Image 1 (cartoon, rainbow, N blue to C red):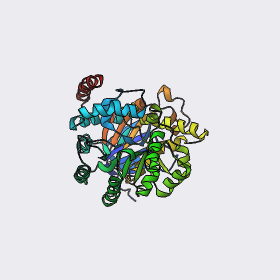
Image 2: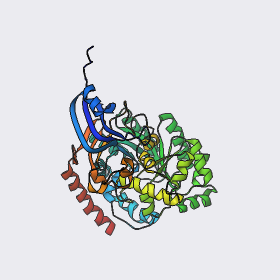
Image 3: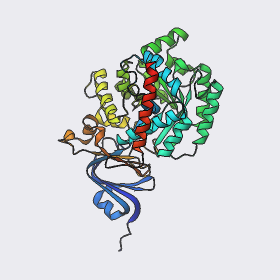
Image 4: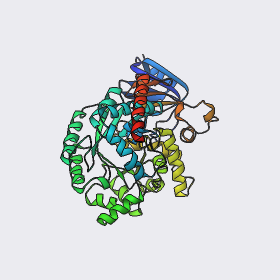
Length: 446
């Protein structure tokens, strides 16, 4: 009997290890991932893959682990241009006396475009292939992600006061609809409603968001219970905690991406689990702003979908998802007083499949499975800093640095090759960043 001819595919990636994330805690040794077009078509031992496939290109990664591209589930990426501007200050002082006044003077399409380009370069070099974006001028943000071939969910901002993006509540919603429609068929860019927070959004706007999110079938992404001050302020104003207020308005549901959540009761945790809310843990931003501690392990045990995000560079001050996973795992152990809490395998899930689930993209990204998008990152584990190697997943979370990311693909297209960005103009990005630094430093000094 004659054997069938090998299947022609665009790419065969052969790795020392593959960590598909699904199934959980699985490490495949000497495996290959076959990619055709923008999708994964097979995961199998290297020897079998060489028989089964005839690739147009082959990448051999003999000292590397191949993982799903990481997903940053809460970012304000234009704010990379404000990195280090106003450090070591509490949240409201930081926002009201520094960030908001500077933003008011510089925000516009050029600012968000240049900030997103800087962030995309940083994210790709750190193995991140998707970001959940929350900022103004989503039209320019989405267009920049599209141009750069980077996957994103772009927030449609709603806030109670006038900004350079919109002057009235009606205008916020009109422009949100226009931006959503413009990316309706984009293969990489999706949208979500992004009301800033309960203390900056009215009941009327939240009710409109609830109805429109259902009609458009998109998530709702907002800051919630970030600080004790926020919770107490709402309680004094309405007699309700912010979470209770959103429950009353019908926003506590499986579309909600609730960010920070440092102030939670047992009842609120149970309600999140029952309603299918996703919680985004931003441990480094919360620590830096002294906002509080998200009860991440308690949420996990309750069955809540927990994802991880960096927040913006103005309050982190980086977009390093390897660092964020490590901090999330370590902090969860301390908060829970349990060394077994938030184990390495779960930490990796919070930056991959859990994050994809929060965004409603778990059918497309977040794990290495046949049929899914080929969003992949290769991590070199032969460095001194990750030797000796006993457990691959533990090493990824507790010892690996983002500088060990060697190669990245988004939708099957190579974006990083042997640590070199493939199609980004690094000199241009740096020149524009330096120009913004001069302008912004002068404004903040006034």
